[in-house]
Image 1 (tube, rainbow, N blue to C red):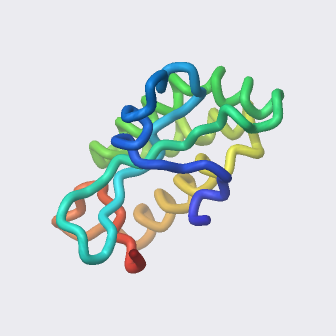
Image 2: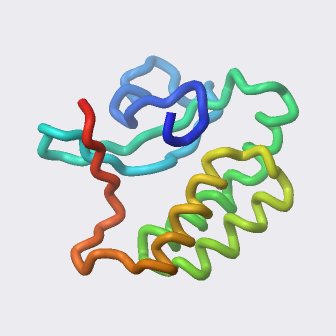
Length: 124
């Protein structure tokens, strides 16, 4: 719901499948669910997206990974520039739009000093 996508699962769930590499996917966030101790890597499965959208996400997956790396390393300006370049190619990428908005909020309002890139969810 937060990311505007239809299929999301944990990294653990993805790699428990017998052939995870047969699916088109990308890491989209690290989350910590209320009441749980450890963070979880969240994966978007976009195998079932319309053909054009799937192809665009595949073609920008490397850029997306670089943007996420910059984001997690607090290099918000670099992450924003990379995410914006993805939107130039695929304006309908809702996950990228989500991160652009999040980064702009961080750049405007700052982040807590203990920010570690993990999104705390307040629902189980």
